[in-house]
Amino acid sequence: MKVKDGIIGLVVGDALGVPVEFYSRENLKNHPVTGMRSYGTYNKPAGTWSDDTSLTIATMASIINKKCIDYTDIIEEFIEWQKNNKYCQEETFDIGTTTYEALTSYTPGSTPFCGRTDYRNNGNGSLMRILPLAFINNIDYKTIEKVSSLTHGHKISRIACVLYIEIAKSMINNSNLSIKEHVKTASAKIMEYYKNSEELIHFKRIFDDDYSKGISSTGFVIYTFEAVIYCLENTDNYKDAVLKAINLGEDTDTVAAICGGLAGIYYGFDEIPIDWINQIRQIETIFDLCEKYEVVCDEYL
Image 1: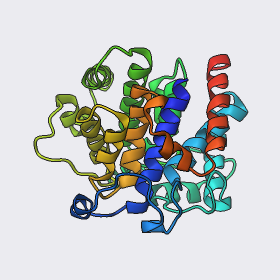
Image 2 (image 1 turned 30 degrees about the vertical axis):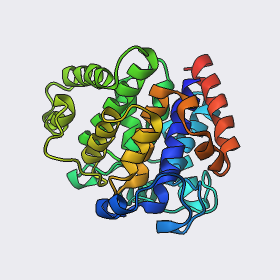
Image 3 (image 1 turned 180 degrees about the vertical axis):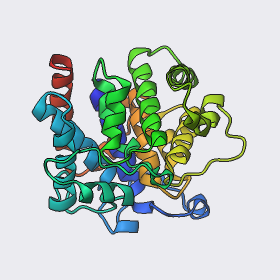
């Protein structure tokens, strides 16, 4: 069940990273994360997920309920999370600035595509929640871009989401390829489709598989994506991939969530440490959602 592989992989990575978000790389080098921690940055119990998971499952819930991608319904579910604590375990926390600006600018009856289009609005807030689209058989690039544009409308963010989904779909459909081959295959499709886009220059290190100038793990969508691919390509199992992502420091929950989503698909659910899964609060809710989403994807999408 690839939905469960990817979504549980994402949720576990998110929860592992929450307690040390914004910790420096030096701090984590001296005190590395090796498993679930309690409290930390947001003073939350072990197994608490953040906005990464909340917005991912909000997307899934909307698609399950509507049996299609309804952009207005998705953004209204996001607002239910932001205003009314839906899709979180206690209360909403860690909402990104660009996401907040988009959700607070939406009014019923207006366009749902509220994502700012300035270069500075290229945080990783749409990349972190886009994974559910990978399980829809005939998803097209324009739809992926529109789902990104609900909160993040700049073309860099939109292309990043498309590339992420292409890598995930390659992993879903071609189990005999290496991670590097999945990235290369997806990158070739992106380079062809967006060949006239000047924004492709920002993805050059991913396309060239060249991280010789070092890895940043901050919230800029390109740096996040580079960190994810670097961690996946330099480990050989789910556990090491997400721990490597977290111990880079800075935006630990999101880098680990995105990395965990792909690592979950690539290595499979059974390779995610069961003690980590068992510490996720309300994990049965996520399992149930994954099962329902798989059915909807198979029957309607």
